[in-house]
Image (cartoon, rainbow, N blue to C red):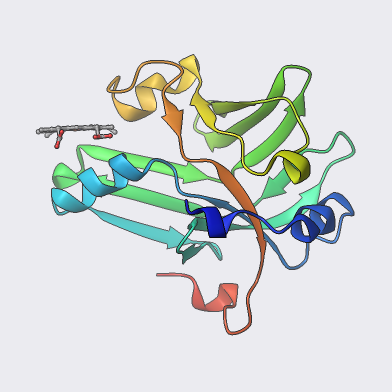
Length: 169
Ligand code: HEM
């Protein structure tokens, strides 16, 4: 979310090299959405090793598939309005496709593509903006039209003193 939070290139390279044991995929979702949720007294719970960092929510990277897909485990649930607003972001994956990276989550009906980023090497380009995918408009109750800019993703290694065991809430 900040310039300073952009991934050090070596972190992206660590992930690319398959050294995922200490890597996090960090995503801030959408700052205005989180401000709104906080403003109406909502809450966010985390599980399965997901941690909260200044840059966003850190989902532990579990594997990199042969096609370059970054597989994470972890979940956050955003709730407000007495549970009417209930958005779960579970096990995000970042998959390279010919038209750009696709960020998807696990949903009740299989994986849902939430956002796409323009093609390019994230290690070289930093953090390209994410655009809301048409399939995920309902996830935000139709509030954001397709293409709405979401927060970018970052890659980070665990910092000293932060361990996923302490991340659950
Ligand atoms: C009791 C039901 C709900 C009420 C009364 C309500 C009310 C509101 C209001 C008043 C705003 C405008 C806030 C502002 O501009 O400061 C807003 C924005 C929004 N609401 Fe809700 N809402 C409800 C349910 C939901 C649900 C179920 C979702 C699903 C995710 C949702 C997602 C959003 C989003 C994404 C925004 C825009 C936040 C932003 O980026 O500024 N709302 N809502």
